[in-house]
Length: 157
Image (cartoon, rainbow, N blue to C red):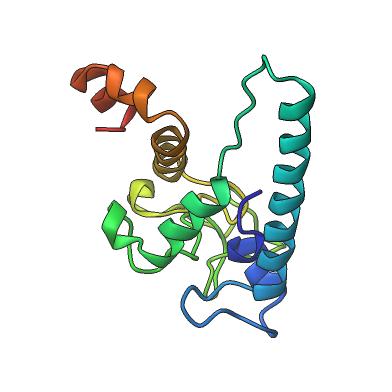
């Protein structure tokens, strides 16, 4: 599970509360996601023991997204990783009554600089970063076996 407390939609809904000073994300929601991920890992360990001939991988989406939120410039994103590219207004550019595409909303000029497309979904660039980070963490041999051109084409150069 991704860090729920970093989603612009939830940040706009729950502006008061316990926010992490480093990321700006809502701590209790991220704690819930971390709890879910620990429980999932426990279940995966049980499944691996029950099915020793089966490869069962855990993709750490939480870590990949959290790293992106804390260090957006490192990955080519703008300094406000919690603001949506397309939406309404406010700190997070998200409004529950003005979803992306509705009258009064506008998309940013360059979605590749944003983590969130519409406050709920990631941009293509953020999805690419998350996929590449997950491949690097879980399947480094597979990723390194691809040609540089193949890695560049999918954005994992």
